[in-house]
Structure formats: structure tokens, C-alpha cells
Length: 245
Image 1 (tube, rainbow, N blue to C red):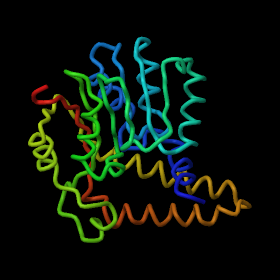
Image 2: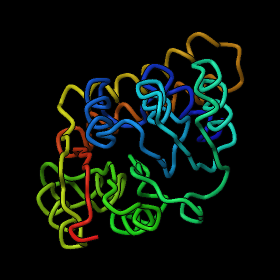
Image 3: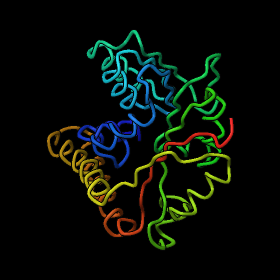
């Protein structure tokens, strides 16, 4: 069972691949597309959940998504067809860091995908290349809510605290116009959903050759969350505009 298969099963009950509940996703999108007729780009769109939510909410919205996963893009196309929004969605199978478009976009999203660009600031640089004047970026990134252990840093990455994260963004030429710090409930719900879904799949498919690996992975990841980073790691989404266009 590869990483992509594990992710697909783990997110079956939590399609937004980040610790955000439905209300938070909706509010962030509203801040990102104040008119409702914007052009939206998602760099690292996965199954297109953010784009599908936007297209279903605003009938004048146009959206494009970029991802390296053929399976996730196929899932996005199927969902778009089911929702009747496929004519307003364009999907690109390629590395988001290499994506080039002749068009600019009013909102560029990259939530929980900064690893694909090498970090927060490189992600903002990539997003900025696609941004129309006056446009907005919606970015989601982890941070350390408390001093982490060395094991936590090795496991999740070398993040900074929330204030420093925002300071780095501002120093890079961006102004936050809204944001959301995931609550304890959102963080916990996300972890329970992911590893619970993977464990349930394993228990429901005892004869599958991948069931033992799936159950072992769910058990390991749940333990890592509870013992290593639950009390130290947080997640923030920022809605940004350029300080000067």
C-alpha cells in the first residue's frame, strides 16, 4: 500500500486534507472570493475539495487545479461531473512548482502543500507568480504552538511559532487580511478521522493483503500524534494580499 492509497483511505471521512471544519473552510473561501466571480487556482489541489466547494457555492466562479496525483485528479473530475460544475473546472497533471499559466488568478490557494515548494516563503513566491493585481492568496501552514521536542521536529519539520510565521510573511511583502487558527477540536477531529478511517478500512477488509499494513500504519500514526506532537503543533490559514502591487 503506497502513500497515496493510505492518504485516500485516511481522508475518506475528512476530505479537506487539513485540520479545518466545514464552517472554517466556508469562511476562508468567502474571504478569498469576495465578489463570487473570481478565477481561482489551487496549487497542490489533491481531490479538488476547495475548488469544488467554491464552484458549488458561486455559479460564476472559474477554477483550475494542479496536482501530481492522477488518482486525485480523476476523483476531482468525477466529483465535478456529479456536482454539475465540470465545465468551470480545469485540472492539470503536473508538479505545482513547475506550473505555468498564461492567465492570472484572483485567488491562489495552497493549503497544507508548502512541502511541495520547499517551505512557506517559496510557496508564496510561486503563488505570487500567478496572482492578478489586487488578488489574494490563501495559504495553510503548520506552526509550533509550544516548544517542540526534537522528535516532533524530525517528524513534522522545522516550523516556527505563530507570531514568527506571520512576521515572516509580512517581511516577505504580504499583508494578512484574514486568517484562521485551527482549534483544538479541529486538530483532534482531523487526526481521529484520518487514523480511524484507515483502521476501520483494515478491520472491514481482513482478507486484503494490505489490511495488516493499514492497521499498523493507523496505530503508529495515532500514537505519534498523541505522544509526540498533539500538544505542540498547530495549523494556521492566512488570507493575504500583496502589501504593494
